[in-house]
Amino acid sequence: MAKEYCKWGHEMQRVFLTFMVCLTLAACGLGETAVSAAAGAASEAEQAKEALRTEARVKQQLDAAATLEAQRRQAADASSQ
Image (cartoon, rainbow, N blue to C red; front, side, top):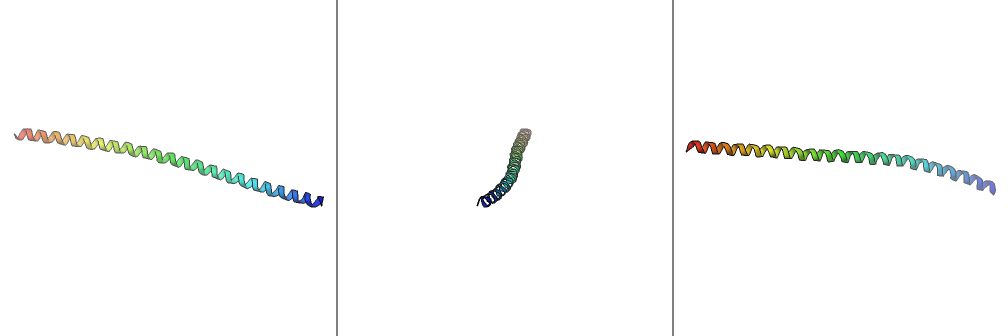
């Protein structure tokens, strides 16, 4: 009976070690996925910031063009009177 128990103990050790190795490898994959997701999120955040800066720059250019056009109209009205 003791031999059977000893044999069973060695089998359980092998199963346990195999399980731990698989778990460790899976954890590495999860860690890599988390790092990749974080890098992707940072990239998306930077793209969003750049889009906001571009939008602000375009609005400023449109405002400047509208102001210039208003000045031209005023000058044309003044010269026609």
